[in-house]
Image (cartoon, rainbow, N blue to C red; front, side, top):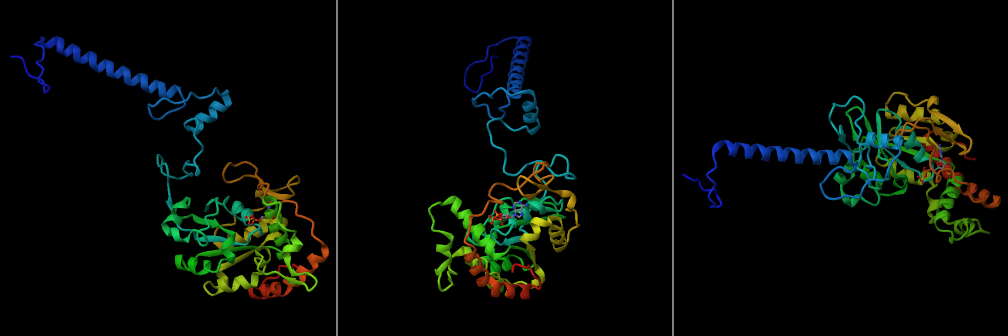
Length: 354
Ligand SMILES: Nc1ncnc2c1ncn2[C@@H]1O[C@H](COP(=O)(O)OS(=O)(=O)O)[C@@H](OP(=O)(O)O)[C@H]1O
């Protein structure tokens, strides 16, 4: 008797062998379709969905090899965080480690040499650093700790997460907020002669806004009286002793490490040795990691963390400063002297800025 298909149509009363043959043909057809689709995806580097995509531009052999190594779909930007698992991670685990809140933060100071410290310390295998400045404890606090944690690189149990945001040092609420996250957070402050720092800061602003008043014009409330405008950020940031007071209300001095911005340039390995001691990690970063780049005029890394290639910091680090009247510089030295002395006394270190 003829069976009824769910649709209600009567199945043809075909003999059993021809039904089997029809099924085989159907299976073979489906298989060949799948194979063709697979081959198409392999041959065109634009993998992914079956939706039509733009064809890849022709690439030369070397470039093609690199593309294959990266195995990244064409036309897409590189992911912000390289997905390659670090050595020693479980095979097949695409993203090993856990996103953790930082155990150490480079909290300042702006134009002190904070980028250099971050780029140098992240070469250490026990350190993983967030490359961008999250500004969590000043501008983004309302986003919450989970947001902050989500920005962090993944770390293994043995690794320390580090971030840097130089504006924290002069943010009134930052010490309390960091303390509330973890009272054990290690703090790193890169300090530099406040007069040079102010000029560096001004040079940076001028590069973005060429129409701002002169350095002299912004520095003084009354130049002939030598009245310095402490409300101008470029001046205020360099009053280190004042800002440090806020941090010492929450953290003992032993939990704050001060890097000399000057020595960081003349002896990067020496300064980084002290940073590694402070973080409680082996002194892995040594003289061997640096070379002096004559064109840049600064020490550079022989092998960067990201590419393993020699790397100097970018153009915004090590700019030629604007020329400032020597008399103004002298007035500023006088202005900062008492703050500097207080700062040396508090931290127990003479930075020799006079
Ligand atoms: N190795 C190396 N290469 C280049 N630059 C170096 C280096 N070490 C320290 N510096 C000094 O770092 C100064 C910039 O400081 P920051 O990185 O803290 O600046 S920022 O606040 O993040 O904008 C920058 O200041 P300027 O020279 O005024 O541009 C440098 O003097």
